[in-house]
Length: 119
Figure 1: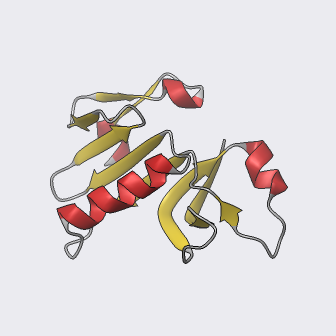
Figure 2: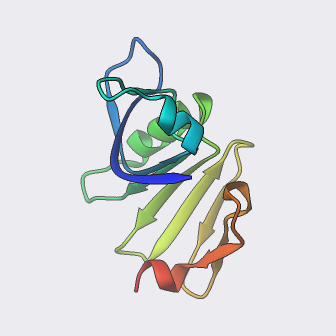
Figure 3: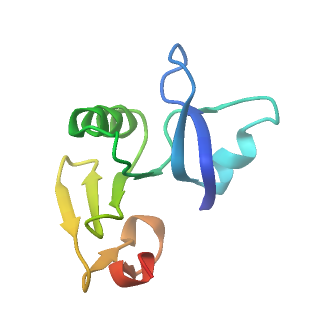
């Protein structure tokens, strides 16, 4: 996996360019993108850092767009509440809090501690 801050992508070719706060794509997909091209389809992992102006509806719509077009998981990191909400491809939404570990099995790793993310 290749992690990129502010990763630009086109979930659907006719849509405008979107940007994930943090995105991860497979090395093969990253290598297939030319210097002047956009990533087509959503990154395998999209991480959005919740800001005060994000609405629940907006985040749900963004998650649905990404999951529908290639994301394995969509994360919402809420610094104020110190939570990570993960929506999976299967439509399951899970909230992780301090003291929890977030499984990363879809990405070839074991887990990461919520405490480490907010440290």
